Image 1 (cartoon, rainbow, N blue to C red):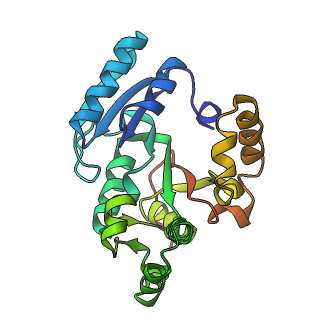
Image 2 (cartoon, rainbow, N blue to C red):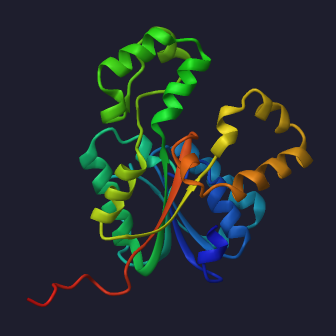
Length: 249
């Protein structure tokens, strides 16, 4: 998707970059990237990967910061990636701050791509683990409305995931629109394949089968019934070329 919206040599800010997987792929395609992550270890790993690939000249900046408090040059980037931070920010104010910083970094006409964790992902994972008491407690305490998951048992705290914020599609689009962005596309990521483990894990070991599966997932990624049915969905949005104006009276 990114090659479809990026001109050659674009400047991309990757907020929550982790060890630099996405940024490295973009750099290999000729783009210039800046990395922001809260983890010094991840940023060190990312820089090593860039050095090993001989792509340090495509690395604009590396900054250690949380996603809601970063400090980057306004209007300097053609695209901003939020491929993780929004499901680690439990507080709505922090989420808004994160998106506001991302939008400020975008040049007019630039694109924001954000990944969100779905409500159903938590329910499905707990079903697969047979943790029905935890599911019922979550549902009884309003999880389907507020979307905030916190492990309720010692076992889930040990082997599942830390507290996360899930979003409905409506919540995700509202968050981006309120930051002044125009929604352009929405895609399911895993789509129907998210419901097919352990079969999917077996397919992943076969390059040809995984390639064919990926092609099917991409072909069906915009089906409305799959957007919130998988584990994650991706929302692409664009910063207007001109600032919003007050309508004529």
